[in-house]
Length: 329
Ligand SMILES: Cc1cc2nc3c(=O)[nH]c(=O)nc-3n(C[C@H](O)[C@H](O)[C@H](O)COP(=O)(O)O)c2cc1C
Image (tube, rainbow, N blue to C red):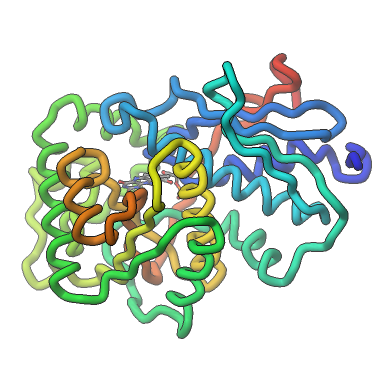
């Protein structure tokens, strides 16, 4: 079955817009999309040239971001009233290819899916303390179920020792990053137009239990008041996968986005603390001690923010290609 442009308002453009709303390291948007014409299929591809070369040399985080974009594509297909048919990598001789989504049988979106679709433009990354820490009843169990449904494991850190260890690992990795001029340059260069908005980085990066990225060089210039330190940290979770191949990372990205949208649907947002996953030693310790031997793909804090900031995206004309040629939308 094909979907005519007339009926859908050009489905590929809608899928690309939805995909682009996914989170990505420093808003790098390391993806491109290919439409096959007449909405037969829609490819999600990783753009290795847009990965964070110093923070993410192997491209693990870029692939996770594309996995999150893929989840949005699946939801956008559901929004159009069809079941997505997903073919995952590999495609021999095409290392940028991650997935192709086709249109399956007609079936209206469920209430749960509609809530996730609705949450897509409302989900934003948080930084700094949360205003309210009480999560809606049952949310964490729901999020565990959502991660499991995508082939990942969501571990909620409940024991004080686990939290302490996580704080120590994030601190160690963030200190290593801050002492590295290359890494500092990469982080700062991605603040401002087209990257992470300045206003979204105003909180002191050390205000919560887990150290944050120091996008504005605040740690050197301002000390966090002791009475505020650690307040507003929220609930800390680790998302992991049983294996660590490329397809597992695509799955991790889909699980991440499903978790983020399910939380956002209930006004809960996430802060990202991926620094310990960017250094082999801290990632290995985290794997052993806080991920039950699974491969940790993401570290998040969850809570309710007092306010959120919107981060801009590249226009569809820059990310969507028609059969190998640049498209004009
Ligand atoms: C793999 C990955 C790693 C990320 N790491 C961080 C991080 O360490 N610190 C941070 O503040 N945001 C991090 N982010 C969030 C991005 O900065 C954010 O998604 C991007 O700026 C777009 O903003 P939005 O999520 O509000 O739409 C990460 C996102 C992804 C997908």
